[in-house]
Length: 79
Image (cartoon, rainbow, N blue to C red; front, top):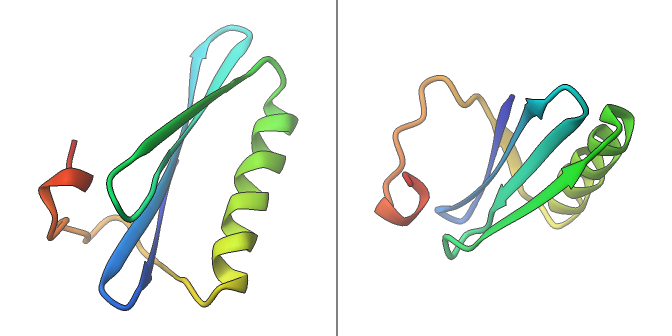
């Protein structure tokens, strides 16, 4: 699952996926294109980490936008 947030023309996004039977990945790309990857053995822990990141961004005014129609303006986020 992917989620994107926008603020003043900058974008951040999260991606979650199942890597293995007991492994889930949370990948966070910040507005500068830096990628942070975290791995979880429990999907509920993955959900909590993603929700916490989303809430933090929303608290600072980031707006969640649909990901389906998004074409990144910056090549750093398109990797």
